[in-house]
Image (cartoon, rainbow, N blue to C red; front, side, top):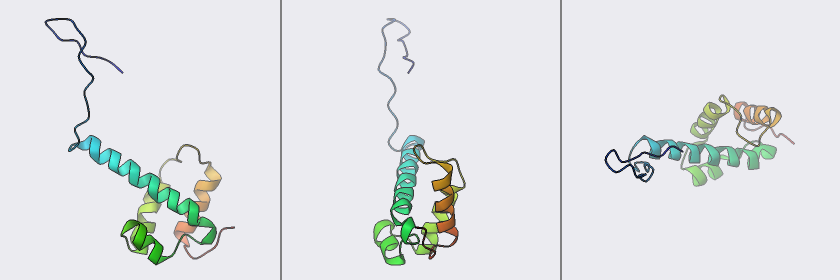
Length: 102
């Protein structure tokens, strides 16, 4: 992390803190949601991806909306700690949510 220096005194200033109402907060919210959606998918993948009631209670989303959001995530880069095989299995569940992947 780079530190800024006060122009007159030459002493270091505290690093900037993210603006809680700005883009940093929105990005943090997206990353949290991304992790929650993938964690849910990982837990439910062996059972076909979770049922509509569990999705609604957990995320407040209709089943179709959940799988649409999850698919956007899965079309991106693999998350740290997950290999391409797991990522592809989640894509299959996303495409065919009632198919069990055991």
